[in-house]
Image (cartoon, rainbow, N blue to C red; front, side, top):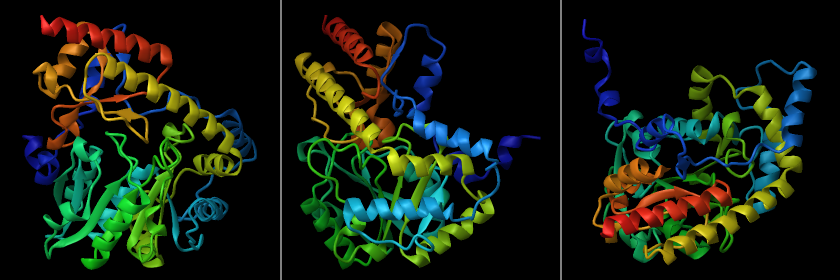
Amino acid sequence: MNWSDRIAPTVKAIPPSGIRRFFDIAAEMKGVISLGVGEPDFITPWHIRESCIHGLHRGYTSYTSNYGLLELREEIAKSLHKDYQVTYDPRQEVLVTVGVSEGLDLAMRALLGPGDEVLVPEPCYVSYKSCVTLAGGTPITIPTNVENEFRITAEQLEEYVTPRTKILLIGYPNNPTGAIMSREDLEGIAAFALKHDLIVISDEIYAKLTYDGTHTCFSSLPGMRDRTIVLNGFSKAYAMTGWRIGYAVSNVDFIAAMTKIHQYTMLCTPITAQIAAIEALKSGEKNVEHMVSEYNYRRRLIFNGFRQMGLDCFEPKGAFYIFPSIKKTGLTSLEFAEQLLMTEKVALVPGDAFGESGEGFVRCSYATSTKNITEALERIGRFIESIKK
């Protein structure tokens, strides 16, 4: 029997992650410096880990409500109100998820039907389009460009909207570019969504990692609270990637629909991670400030390094990625990444892994030590000089 023939055509058609391929190779090589995986190099702060340990000692090992621990949902609602002046009912409008990834999957499956279209600005996180496809929808990609600092505009969106468009999916601060959107920028997008009666899914996992300007929560914009699903979590700002804990907030109908799927597929987020997340929200802000300050230093270090070696480079203003152009080298994004890895043992991600508009760029994460960044820059500079000869 050919088992491959039994796999669903939709799944077979989805390409594997363009990020993981390089790190599978790099994992088998010695002396590699990775600027690839979007994961903090910090360990989860001790007091957050300790709260989990204490919870285990007290026997907190059971299921929770499908929605998540009420205390955690209350803390999430308090945090959103404090930071963005937007109010949610913690009992019915907050859902704790297994990372933002599950939240995105739930939102798509709860909303999409055959023929529904989702507007997805590119470059974008690798799972966006695949999540749309797996939910039965059709992703419609909108290219952004470095000349406009990788921001999306209502005028661009107007060129792609159709009667079948149901959702606009955005993620700012952006992975992979490090771009942000000002409040004024987002107000234009909100007006577009209202005009076309669209639902907006806003991935704000990097909200606290904003270095230039102030992050605006999309649902806090006039008229957007009840038509926006905000996704966020603890992985990036609190260095809690392995805990796999995120959340979705929206109006009661959207959250109820997402929870219906969640209760049959995941049941609940692990209680240990939820306990840790409560502590993070209650007492973790100083840790976040410290990590953001360090990322900001590294951001300037790597940005200046790329500019000094002659690469055109947009200055990232959020997240912990930089997206330099390698077009001057004459290599494709894939060729640049492969040759750099093999000759100088620096792992980064080719820009086209994030969509066609990422071709000619590479993504580098500066969520690694200054020592690694400095050494990686030296190796990349040496590689660029070698291909000029």
